[in-house]
Structures are given as C-alpha cells and as structure tokens.
Length: 265
Image (tube, rainbow, N blue to C red; front, side, top):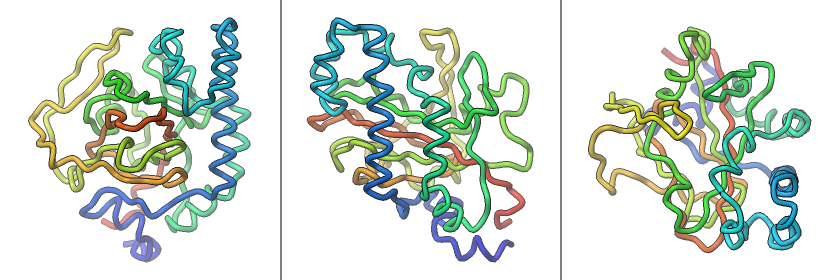
C-alpha cells in the first residue's frame, strides 16, 4: 500500500466507498482563464459556420447561448470534435497551477488522456473538452453510464489504456447554478456490476447506457459552485442533469490516467 495515497482524502474517496470527491476547486483566476478560452472557441466556430448571427451570439455571451440557439442547428454545430480545446489552448492550461496542486493532492503522478473520438484517437494531444446544456432541453444530456463502458467500446480492439493504468474523470463547473443543473452521480455505484446496453447513435457508433432500473432517489445532483470539480471513479454511474436553471450550463471534462500499482491494493 502506498503511504502517500492513504494521506490523500481525494483518492481515498474516489477509490473508497463513495467513488467521488468534491474537495478540489480551481482559483477564480483559473476559472476566468477557462471561460475565456472556451468563449473564444465557441464564438469562433459560430462565426465560421453562421457569420450572419455571430454578432448577436457574441453580444449575448456563453451563458445566454440558449436564447439564440434556435437560429442554428445545435446538434450539428457542436459534436465533440468542435468542443475539444485546441492544442494551443491545452498547452496554456496545463501550465496553470491547478495541475500541480492536483499532483500534490493525489500524492502520485498522472497524465492527461489523449483525445479520443469514436472515429479515431490522437494520443499525443491531451484531451480537455467542454459541454453546453441548455435550460429544459433533454437531448443536451446523456443517459446514466460509467466511463469504463466508453473506454471498452472506444478501444476498437486495442487497449485504450495500459493494463497497469486506471482513470479518474474531472468534471469541472464553468457556468452552473448549484442544485438546478450539473452532474448526477450514484454514490457507491462503482462497487457494483451493472447491466449495460448499447444503442447506435446518429453517427452509427454505439452509445452505452444503464440497462436496469434506477430509482430517482439513488441519483444525487452534486451542488457544485463554478470552479469546483467533481473527481470520480471510472466505474461510477453518472450522467448530466436536465438543466432546470435559467442559463446555459457549461462544464469541462478531463481524464487523468494513473498507475494502478501506485494505488492501495
């Protein structure tokens, strides 16, 4: 057993009974930096695809995106490929102090997973991507699932990660209204084997989801503030909550890859 991990409350929760931790947050300056990079990518894509509407979107801003989203085709405009931060932006983000603070809190080193799409992987390109969830739009959130289910189908016959590697997902609040939107998790669900089904998406690739009943009171909407993170086990059931707020929810996801041998047995 690694003594450093015993002293890490975050890893103790992520790999213990809970399966997740909310004990980490980025600074206000780091949050502003994330918001700026995402907003620039968001408006640049709108300008490229819908220059006739770009000025209105720019004036409204990211939090009010939903007020104008009827002017464009949301699903066509925002596949994951358009929401992965550019290499240059990622190179800037990984120099921020929050990465080093996480390493210190974990007590062990990690790497950021490479970019993974259904159609291809880009291993030398650290994946940091964002999501938009409009108020009241059920199709903006996915069904309950575990990251491990996606890892298994995205591997395409080749291991997505090494046999001695395990992942932790960071779900980071950029613009949220605590208690009205955010991420559902099922505490302790990483300790159980769940039935999974696979449904073809519009792109033809399968999407895994939970294939057994789950009572509403088993799901917990984690009330995080902007800048606060949820770090969770790759086997934890989770899914986006339908946005009951008044603004567009924006979040970021990063997958950290750690060595299993560094974790307690």
